[in-house]
Picture 1 (cartoon, rainbow, N blue to C red):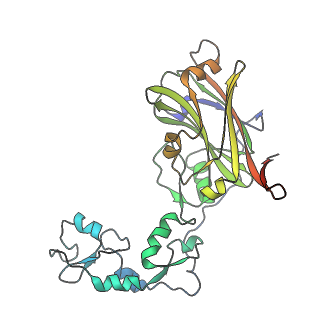
Picture 2 (cartoon, helix red, strand yellow):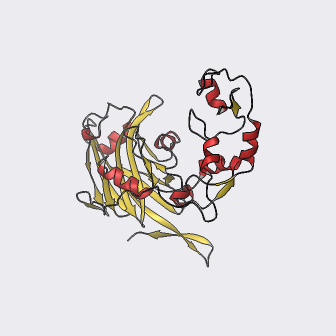
Length: 313
C-alpha cells in the first residue's frame, strides 16, 4: 500500500498547517576518534584474530589448517572444511596458542569512536558490543527494508532528506487519514511522522495490517533513543467521532525495538475496521480517521516520591 494513496492532513498543537521543517542536522562522522586513554589496540594481534572469510573477530574454537592458516568455527562449515588461503583440508586442528593470546587481551569497545569509553577482556567484549548504548541505531523507517545505520542526528536528516518523512516541532498532533477504499487492507505501513519534542525525537506510526483474519488499523509511538531514556516519556493517542472515542496511553518504545516487533506485540492503539468505519461516518465507504494525541515527560517529584507529568507548552 503506497503512502501516496492516503491523504494526511496534519496539525500541531491542534492547528491544521503544513509540515514544519526541523533545523538541518548534518551527518555526523563516526570515524577518526582516538581510542580511550591508555589503550592502543594492537593492529597486528587484532588482525591475527580476524577471520579471513567473514572478517569478524574469532572466538573459540579457532581452527587452523596444517599450514597454520586460521578461521572461525562458523566459516569452517561454510568453506566445506577447506582452508580458504591454501585450499588444504582443515581437519579438526585447534589453534590453542591464538586462543590463549585472545584470553590475555583487553580491548576497547569497537564503538569507542562513537563515544564508548569501556575496555573489556577479549571474550566479554562481544557481549558488551551487542548491548552497547553507543552502537548505531537502525533507520526506523518501516515503509522499506532500509539498511542505513547511524546516530540520531544523522538518522533524522536521513529520514527527512531520503525518505521525505514529515517533520514537526511540538508535543501534540492532530492527523486526518483518508483512504478511498478501506476494504483493501495489506500488510503495509501507511505513515511515519517525526516529532521534535523536549529536545528529543519521536516517530509516530499509523498503518493497516491483518490481525489474524481481521483487518485493523494501528497507531503507536517510538522514541529515537535507548529504552532507559524512553521510560522518561509517556504519550496518548485518541481516535473517535459520533460521541465515541478510543484512547491509548503508554510509554514509547525505543527504536532499538524494530517496527515489526512493536507492531506484532500490539503495543499501541488498535482500531478494528468496523469501528474505524463507524468513526468515519457517512455510508462507511471511505475511511476518514482523525487521530490526535500528545507526548509528555514524566518528571520526578522528589518531595512526594512520585512522578508528575510535565506537559509540553
